[in-house]
Image (cartoon, rainbow, N blue to C red):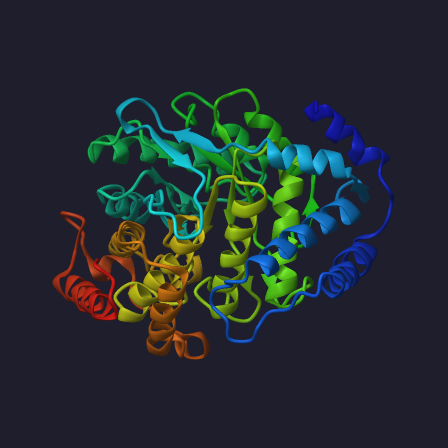
Length: 453
């Protein structure tokens, strides 16, 4: 399908208001589909095991994609897709995808539940607001971790002391600085050609376009093309998607579906996430998907509901329409706390054993720069150990429940931890002794649970 065919549908689809979309095409339709396919969220669950239920979730998401389509907020019309278009695009998704170049090239493959292949690791605290100095230091802390296969970064919020505002010159300059620092740091740590998920400082299409300038995005890099909640696009996102077509720069779709939001609880949110990904295949010419549920109350992906949703989505596509899915890990806790490492371990166990790849860590909900490379080390170590050891979903479920017992209180009590400069030596960009000690203690806990980390 020609990309401009999709653009034309923005102007010819069914007209309606945003309120009508939310009430009739999201809230009401998802409730009806859940009832039709007899789907619920089993309270307290962490991983879904029933293959029949998982297949029904895929079919429910497919039904939503066909019946609802995508709402264009700028034209106030629905972009409709046929069943044949949804299915053809789903079957045509990439089964392998190479990021980076030359000696740093890495190929992601589709994974299955309980797959023995080690998940790919995308390292960083994407979108976290940072000044330029902190941006470079934190980036180096995870770029130097040996487990990583792709790097991402925070979002620069000031340039030379001047605030970055969207749709203004400072945004474009911030993105150019971001790419400059990515180049410098990756060369410094000996990974000059590693793939980058970048343009994180872009809050509009202005910055995204600016990322394509000299020494900017290159073939094997990726950028985000998002949806607004729920199942909503706009001119900004369509420009971003078209910007990279035929350039070698990859389109990564991001639907941050809200658990307990318009789509309902985790079951409704899972249906909405699947529909978002199916529509994105056509709408954005997607190369791979990011699965990032957001808990309406707690934000974190390390909640029971969000981990269960990721388990459903990973398995549903693995069974019905294999593709590259990279799951975000955004814990509630910040750096310098054992709870952060436990949240990362729990989330990584669920993702790895249900067929996803790993991205993170968005420590402290990705809202504060209380992050470091050490939690990336934990994410990579858990993913590798779980895959190579052949940890089953049932075994992972037992481990995760034990970990939840050690961190679940942070969702109500908060646990922002410490800023980067308190947990890492600023001269050598290495973790402080107390932070390493916490890492070792949580590693010992995981060994006691049976994980050969």
